[in-house]
Image (cartoon, rainbow, N blue to C red; front, top):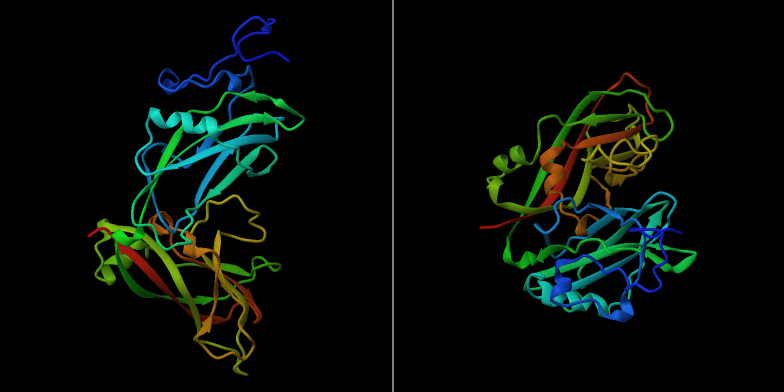
Length: 314
């Protein structure tokens, strides 16, 4: 197979070096040099390399795409107590490569700080790089991507406040998707800016927000006092890649109320403790998908109570 630069015989030439500016400071050892055969992966998340700040409870998603026809890659990550610089470059040469989860040529790595010994009190600086690999030939690779970085700051440095927000949905039921959910409701024009104003929060200072409790109140019921819905799903982000036949938006919580269960009915939150909902609540309104047990065309009312932890930089 041809190498990136040419199809000549390279046996008498030095191995192709990774073209990183830090090579001049901490060059790659000869034992780790190789000829690059494949194109480099394309990293598309996080979207703003080298200028991102996450917080200590967050799970950071690193996502990349391999060249078509290839299904293997290698990832290297280092954690530092100061911003990455060229003198840290040699740390990559000492690492074992990390496994990652992929489907086809789409890959993802979930990076979260261990807080086994308690919450972090100082910022951690993360640097990483990725290369394409051949699952059938472990000696064939691409060049490494440019080193990317992000910082993880401690939540302890932020002011924490707890608020409960009520979302009131008064609607006529529909049956537009009779299999997995019946229809979708949307709380228009009630994003984080409006929520912060109503709860005396400084919108510009909010750095991190997450739901910690979810309750549903069924204001209207059957004449027999039975709940009219067998499932309620909630979420913000509608621009997601999952099968929308099953999920009309990215679901972060749901509830399966019992037929005669009294309100409020507590729901289940999914991994919200590791997520920062700041961008989602800035960009999207809350949405509710319901599975209807009643006949369509009836008037119903649901109140969703969401309790949030809000962390602000005061």
